[in-house]
Length: 258
Ligand code: 13P
Image (spheres, rainbow, N blue to C red):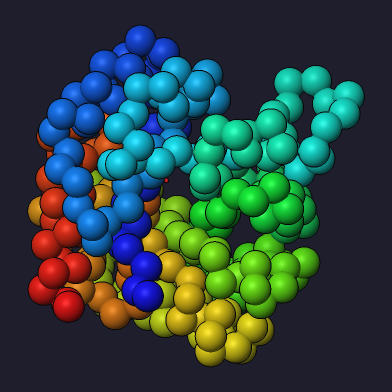
């Protein structure tokens, strides 16, 4: 059975508990239930519990924005996937902001992916090159290294549930998304890596998202790209009308591709 398209809201370190609740209530009312789109919300850790009580579970699922790779122990300040498993279905792993500001290494990201899978949480692995890497023609190498290292402890069965998000670092927080042609080439390469490592079945089972300055006006163009199964949305997901329009855009693009 074809998996639904996936739209993920990454609320990063925005919104306190109250403001998150206001946004969730607006989304509950505004977003229709579409059978071909799965919508996932990733609020801060603090809001996961309250949001899990507030969301309309027919319309929304939850994701953590990160997690620690150990299951439990004396790790002050950390939150494990074994603690998150009762609240979330998904977790964002290896976001470029984690790599950049928190020094996350490829090995750490690999361990987080394993921890996620071990705890029954579906990982959304973010990959993408910086502007400098693109300028120096290193995009393919960077994506290869990020994917090969991150997936190295997983079985082909684990991979079939995986979600990969192509998020070119230079397109995050920018004026507009990467051009469809650029996304197309990167997604092709990402899918090729998975096929080479884990075979055709794994490659056709994964979902690949695009993230980086997604706005309603760009949705149709991005969703037309073969091999794209949804979006990972930052800023526009903080506005309930824009986010709802994005979800509807993904729904409509799914209908026209049927
Ligand atoms: P923006 O949509 O704000 O560019 O953020 C993208 C992102 O980083 C999602 O994870």
